[in-house]
Image (cartoon, rainbow, N blue to C red; front, side, top):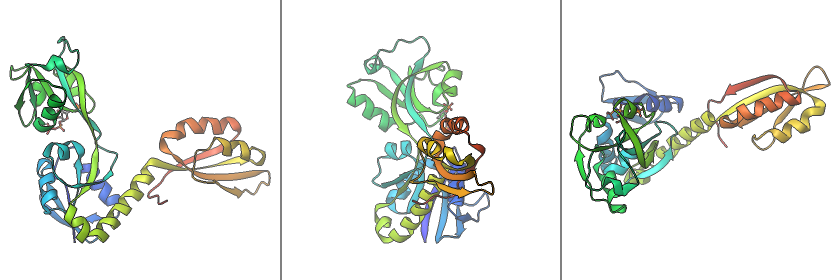
Length: 283
Ligand code: PRP
C-alpha cells in the first residue's frame, strides 16, 4: 500500500485533496482523522503538518507527498522530485520597510532579518557575501519590523498583500516555489509500480487542466485557413455536417492560447465555438 502524505491544513490542503480525487483516489476521511483509507487505488493518505512532511518522506514514513518546493529546500532532505503540480505558486522574498533604501544584497549587511526559512536565507546571504543576522520565527513574520524585532523579513509572497498591509516592500526574490509531488528514494524502488501508476494518473489530470477541447462549425472553404492558426495536437478532426457546405472541426488547444486563437477563428468564419474542459489527457 502506498502511503501518500499531504498537508493537514494550510494553503496546499484543498488543492492536494482535489488533485488526488481528480486522479481517481476516493479519500474516505472525516476531518479529525490523521490517516485515511483510499478507495480506487492501493494507498492511504496521511494528513501531516507541512513542516514535518519532508522528514517523514525522507525516512519512509510516507512514500510520496504533495509538498511545497520551498519546504523541501529548507529542510534539505534527500528525496526525489517527481512532478511539478502547477498550484500554490509563490516566492520567498526579502522585504524591507517602505522608504528604506535597497541597492542589492549588500544593503542587507549588518541587518537583522526575521524569517521562518533560516537555511534558505543563510544560503542566499553566504552566496552573496552578506553579513546579516537571522532571527528565526515560526509565523507572522511580516510584523517583525513593526514591533522592533528585525530590520527586514524573508517570507513567502503570493499576492503580495501581506507585505503591503505591513508597510513592507519586496526587494529580492531568493526562491520561486510551487507544489510538487516528491517521493522517498527507497520506496521508489520497492513500490515503483504503485508510484508509476499514481504519477501516470496525476500527469493525465495535469495535462487535462492545461488544455481545452474546442469544437466549432466552419464553411468547408475555410478549413485550411483555420487549421493554419490552430496550435493543437497533431491534426484536428474534421466531421461533415448535414449542410454539405459546412464542417465541424474538433481539436485540443493549450488553455493559455485559446483567448488568442478564438477571436481569429471567429474572424475567419467559425461559428458556434464550444470550449470544453478536459478531465484527463494522455499523450
Ligand atoms: C503565507 C506567508 C505570508 C502570506 C503571503 O502565510 O507566510 O504571510 O502567506 O501571502 P500574500 O502574499 O498572498 O499576502 P500563510 O497564510 O500561508 O500562513 P503561515 O503564516 O502559516 O505561513
